[in-house]
Image (cartoon, rainbow, N blue to C red):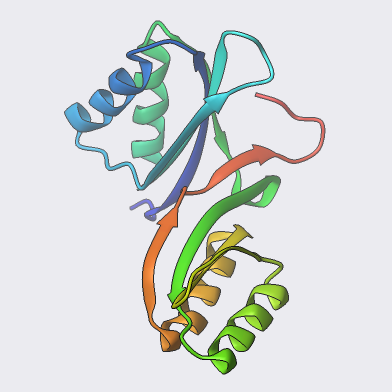
Length: 166
């Protein structure tokens, strides 16, 4: 039996209305879960890059790939090997910071994690951090002691290393 694992699927699609809905609908109809999906314009005008994170065995990945390739607006699909990719996520974290000591500690954590303070309020600080999902999880765990008011995460996006392109 194949092992369940997380798959990073990169797709080049036509950048027009309805494409995201068709892709999401395909996953729904087939009973596949989307753990994360990010979409944005690609380096080629009129095309967008979709990064989809889904969990399943190799059969599930094969079915997802085959079904995505059937969608007219999908130009190219590729499973990105986790070892051969650069994966990053953006996260905004709003945390309680009512004392000078708390503010100082939160700022130190932001610096250690190469994050930035992007907003300051009378009782809170908002941090921005970019990195691997594991790095972001680690910072969130550290900040829980101060009280987290809100977290907004983009979900991972990925690109292949080296000269390979999709």
